[in-house]
Length: 450
Image (cartoon, rainbow, N blue to C red; front, side, top):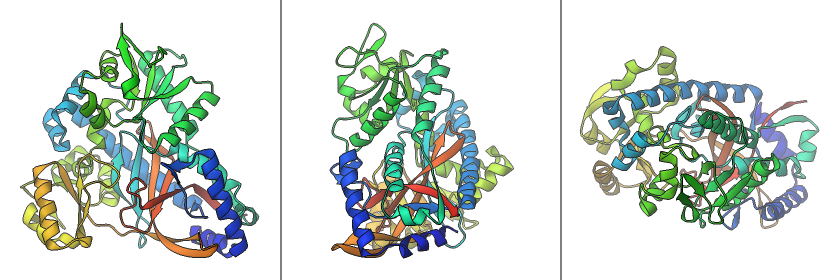
């Protein structure tokens, strides 16, 4: 059904409607601050469509996988030896030992996946359990696309259901505070990240929503925070109860160490931080290796094992060892070197596509250098997966052009237990990432014929 919806949308466009829609969308994005740095976040004039059955299938798959992640996270908390598989840095181990835990490791998270074009199965490439961005952007783009000129003829024949996420973000932040403090009061929230990050525009969208719901919310930086007398304050003296943490922990520790005021306040229980430091093991890309490694199979229930086998591509930490690949025991490093065209190397904890080596896009010499680096610092190796493509209309020289883009599916997950809403990114490059400069974000709708 979603393919029919795509065809119906494109068939309803002509040069005039495409030009009107594209120019309107570009202007509204600039006016509303829906930008990544200084460029509009969305560069095409069609949203992403799911049929009800497709969306329900993604929801079931996601919730099955979240159960496996919870099992792995609980084992990591209990068993330090098991936790070594996640390849945490010493300072991360210290944070896990000293920072109070919340009711779940990652109240806010996002799975990143590609839906296989041959069998329709979602294959998970990473779990963003630390700072899952995009909720504010997708909600804002959803509002714009509902009012897009091209939506008018389409909605005459199709029921269009949006998938808002900011309400969930609001509820998760407040519920985390209530469970942390044990009182049902309204916290003073600070969105914390560096002043120069390109996602500042999304912080403004989130702040506007939270303040509209009656929640005091400000945007500040780690450098502005002061911790004195058991109270965390912003530069102007305002007390902060809850940190909606968008700054990455490894960047924060690199800049201010474990004695940074924000981390001292968290360690003392003076402030609630979402997500907490306990998110780090599952956020590591090695978490997918933990799930798919044959050494850990007996830790998971039969249902969790099925979810892992179905949705997690073969993944291992790069190290000297023997392991199963394609059902055969292999000497891992020599096998990786010979299987370049079917594998990808990824750093254990980075973002924006940094450090990723796509084996099928490099030569043998470059691959060997990549494998050597992966042995020297925490890396994973992962099986290449099929990348789905869909046609998207764009404005080109004032007219309509329909161009194929790779489609990334990133469902938003809440309380580490269920999903609702979806970040969709598209790109002409196999590295589908807005931060890397090759991607665009579009809103996602569930649609069915009237």
